[in-house]
Image (cartoon, rainbow, N blue to C red; front, side):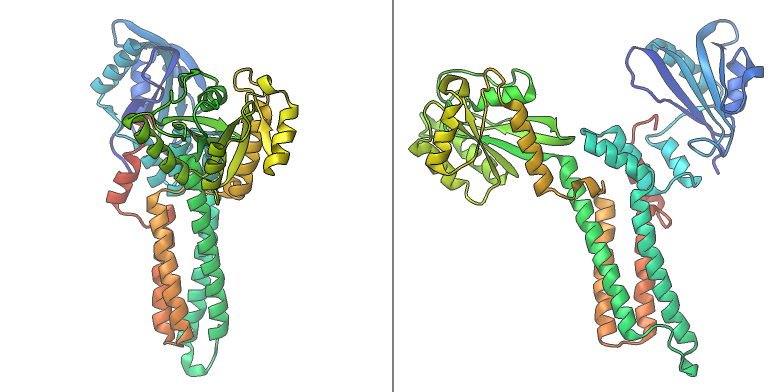
Length: 451
């Protein structure tokens, strides 16, 4: 399909022990033979050792692997060079390739060629990019699953169901003069209802996946000097927030990300909720209240020594309707028995910790993981889908709703078949069976150059 040959580094542009350079296109094999000192050893999927020369001097000693089309990532003849990871060495090899009329690849061009050569569909190609940029174990797992066709299989099943229904309806049109009914109106409604339910479930799974990928917002709340910043540092395992005995040390929101239970957590430390000492502290408290209101989960921190004060009770009351884990901090100063008395007094269940010593952190981490699994029960069965896919699913749901209305009105079969044909086209857009060049450019421009 392509007449030009492209190249690019497939490893990060930093000094390292090894670097990888990719070459793909019809001239890959010829270029490799021209600069490799052991061309007789270049064989399909065989690791050949030799040197790269510019004709007069050795540039580097490398391992070269040649992939013959179509048995390569891109579906074209392709070469991968494993050279030393000095950026000067990589640059010298690339300049040699430029002299051989091998041009630098555009962003995502290797993956784009793989897609256009039928090596993968769009859902699998986009999963490559999410895998590269993943920030949690869950994203990695979901990306790999989609690279292996998990989203494609769901969409293909939906599309096949619509195609089958459309075929039955059109067969009924063809034989309308013979009074043969291939599928009744009632049966069509039932099938469309199942398609609608499947699309709604797919939309929910994509939305849940996107929400999980962005990270679950967890906020630390409490009055001043209860140890929120110390707890933040404990969870992050670094000294991120200033810790002081002086109340009101934290005046702004401190945001960091951490992984708990394989899921990305957006953790925020807030200013202590109390009576502000000045305008800056007042602004900090207002920001804290807004952040707490938007959080998916709140860690309400209480000082075990002081117990639950009136100020604590006001904050607890304001958290009504929120998902909250109550954390009893400074247990090293009060003793573990303090937990039972405070629980009996308030009727609340607490996780006892010492942010200073790290006591109880394992139990707190398990509780956070448990709450996330409970609140986002299907996140492990979700998909990573961008706005392109979400938009297509939404449009598909609209078409199904129109089709349902037409069937309920018992409109002519030709009109219903037309709507179903539009639905088939929409679902084909998800996997890229019908995709414009502009959409492809938008998708693959987000990839890194070597992919």
